Amino acid sequence: MIETACTQGWQAELRLGFAQRSTKTVLASRSQRGPLAVQRPFYPEGEVCHAYVLHPPGGVVGGDQLQMHFQVAPNAHALLTTPGATKFYRSAGLPAQQHQHFQVTQGCLEWLPQENIFFPGANTALHSTIHLDTTAQYIGWEIHCLGRPVIDEIFATGRALFKTALYRDGKPLLLERLLIADETALHTAAGLRGQPVVATLLATPASTAVLELARTQCAELPIGQAGATLLNSVLVVRYLGNSTAQAHRLFRAIWQAIRPLVTGRTATPPRIWNT
Image (cartoon, rainbow, N blue to C red; front, top):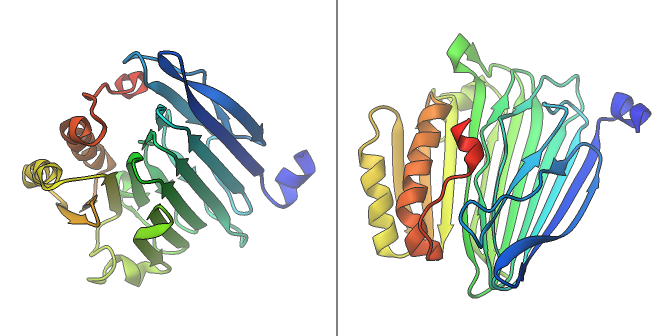
């Protein structure tokens, strides 16, 4: 594995299966390969299983291939987050890829990670595929920071590809793709309009009441831009600005407001968010 890490990058895979046992959701199955892991579950709200996904190397480099597979069985409810930002460093040529595969059957999955930071020169592709059955519930977000705006660093070189596919009963509800391949894409109207932080929150099943709650939070945003829409019973919230902290505050506020309507539970933030 050491030789592979040096010449081709880490080949890492994490598979987690969540199931309902008696009065709570448990981590029923787990397998891992390479530097991806999960901490022991926490139960700050009783039945719901909170788990933290870890990437011990602390950063992703060219050639790294990360695969995450999460399955939620009937009546189970899992909330997953990460303890810190994931950093994608400059590549010497090889691309780095992170694929996330979520399968939820008559249960609920919440995927609420910290942000991804892309250093200039990074060559990355992030793919998220979510498969839900008829009654499954899902809330998830992704926050991407291109460059490091706190030190006025711009993502002037590099490539970042973001793809998301959300299905219910095998039918696509949302398919989207965003490619940032040069500095020009950061400034176009169809790109990031000069803003380094782009973020998306998805929640389903969602109603007009959920949409109005999200729009209320977006309207209170002091700087940056945010908007919400309802598409095929999916709440889609977009943020575009220059602050990952602001994106997190907005999405956490929306999550706290809509969670009771989407999942039937009041919001209990993961403990790690307080550190």
